[in-house]
Length: 406
Image 1 (tube, helix red, strand yellow):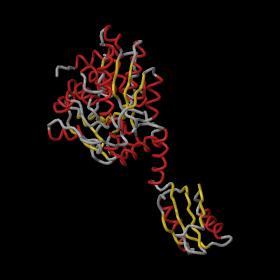
Image 2: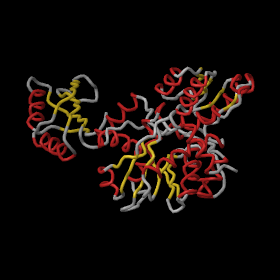
Image 3: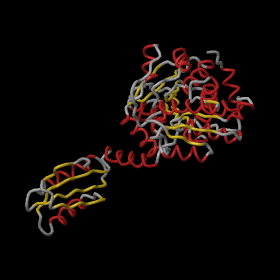
Image 4: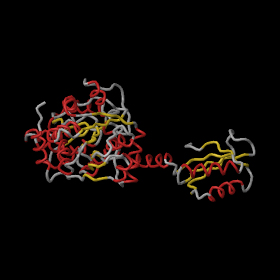
């Protein structure tokens, strides 16, 4: 492929004044946890909520007038669609965005709000892509690929230019990878100017097509549906143009599990007060899980997007509280007589646990006669606090059946 640093610099000029130059922020908290000097490139606060506007806007700006008249169409898990919708609205042209039927509601609604026609089709990005190609053949609209396009790659590569300008002493850049457009552009830009800077890609373990391709040096695709919390990078067929650039410029690829991604999201929310979607959090997850170990080095983690559904945030927070010992579900068997429940609750209150909810069941056939089952959701301080509570209840003669979710 003939893409060069000159084209990425040209894209930067086109995007100037259109997009935000997002900050590169140092994180003392995550530096302490990982041993690296961790910086965040905060594309989660970019216009449209992700880096995708860079490539989409640059691509549409390069279309000829007769192409504009036909309108544009794309397939997207959500973020690229918002970028295309925004860029098309700025250009005054029609846009159609095909998204998976299970795309996060926040991404679907935002795409519509930017003025695009949205079509929901299939169970993942690849299904949406197939439907978009069918519609493109019917309408003659110009297809704007989400990642496998030189102009898209050039636009995404401006992230790399900004990082080097903002933190010249960068030692490594950690980049989320789905189809590969972002890491291809960043790698080309950075290696052209600072070849000693390491470029490390991170994928979800549930959608590792580019990771496997990079490992084997042979383009590969996944078969069957992929399901991951990082829906923005859930791609079965990575870009072939991007794969070529990965082989030339990317130093390392790693994967992370969904539970690790969830922990990174909740930690970013609590420690850094930043809302980051699953795809955007994979780089931090890799550092926290020591998939990437670079003690004392300046490591920039690209937080690629912040478009996460509020329902998902609620679930992740709840799971995070349970995992960290700050909430616990308890199930106990008590005598079915007056005052027993009060005594149980007083014992818990004495240890300064906040009772969020109580359920009392005396008719479940699995519960012995003359007994009742009590289910409690408690707000606690940590795992040690939970241990104190359960030990006290056992000392008082209560039978604890479960100390986990029910």
